[in-house]
Every structure is written in structure tokens, then in C-alpha cells.
Image: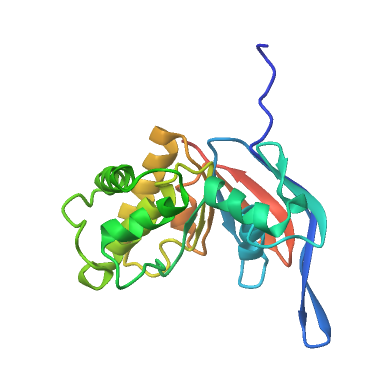
Amino acid sequence: MSGVAAPPLVRVAGVSKSYRRGGQVVPVLADITLDIPGGAFLGLMGPSGSGKSTLLNLIAGIDKPDAGSIAVAGVDITRLPEAELADWRAANVGFIFQFYNLMPVLSALENVELPLTLARMDRRERRERAQATLELVGLGDRMEHFPSELSGGQQQRVAIARAIVTDPRILVADEPTGDLDRHSAEEILALMDRLNVDLGKTIVMVTHDRRAAERAHSIMHLEKGELFAHEELPR
């Protein structure tokens, strides 16, 4: 039906989260409500301790809130049992970390192929998909190299290939340029922009870097566990 807006891919409703430190309860997020459309590129900014990485982990199903709900493509992930939640993460979320988290004893190709071992495909199909994904991120000539033989920017490209090889609904990136020099950071951000624009990947990125955040469609600012500003950025 024309004129009817599509429901958001991610709906965060009234989410709160606290952690215990010894006998003390430390509030991290307070009554967060947020909709993320499919195909969005959202930057989350805020000072250390503002709760942005906690919010990212909740959206990715790594952790569960104390209150509220998080639905992704209509699935309330806060209600899934742990085993089902693990299967959901494997099928729906690609993770990009600041320090790459590659397996040092595996080649670039083997690192990218690793998530596919949980999928129902034979070894040849896994290998071909991993090769195609490394080609996509510009590392077709580095497939047999080990992480120690790659630059930081190249390692992050391998990590991005590993994140997208299962064709997830969402990419979550926690300070993806935080360990890179400016040139490598710009290359990684350009790649993420291409994944968003050309492949339609929904990306949620935590960053301290204003220039990195400005590659997103919009920026949400967190302060002391609350959302306090929303910027729409020109494209």
C-alpha cells in the first residue's frame, strides 16, 4: 500500500540496564527508546561511560536489558532463550571490533570462512563465498596471509569481510577506526559507506571520532545513559 512507511528494522522501547559492582548497582541506560530503519547508518556518540557500547551490545543480542524490549525485524530478541538468541545472532548480526579479533593462527581466508562453519553449506561453497567476500573488501591478493602479515587497515578489512560473509541484517561496529591511522581509518569508513549504500546494510557504529560519525546518516548522542540529541546528516 503506497504512502505507508515501513516499520523500523530495529525498535528499542523503554530499555534500561544496570550492572553490579560488588554490592553497588550502577545504572548505565535509562528508558531508551529508539527506532532504526532498515538501510540506516547510525552513529552513536558520547563520552566514556555514557552507555553507547552497552546499547550496541543490547541491539546485537550480546546482553539483555533489565527493562524494556528490543525487536529486530519483528522478533523480540529480549524474549529469546539463550540458545535461540545465539542462533539468532549468528544469522542476523555481523560484528566489527576495534582490535579486529582475528584468529592469529588462521589465514585471512580461514578467518572469513569461520562463521560459515555454522551454516548448512559444503566446504567448497564456504570457501568460494569467503573468497568472494575478501575480493569485495579489496583483499583478493591477501587471502593466504596471516593477521601478523597484514597492516591494521588490512586486518580490519578481513574483520569486515568476516562480519558480512553470512549476509547479516545488521552490522554493529564498536570503534572500528579506533586503532587505525587517519588514512586507514578513512579507507575503512569508505568501505562501510559502500556496504551501506551499495549493499543496503544497516549499520550501527559506536565512535568517539566526530569525523567518523559524520560518515553516518544520523548521529545519536548519549549522556549518562540517556539519549539527548539526534542529528540528521546531509548525504
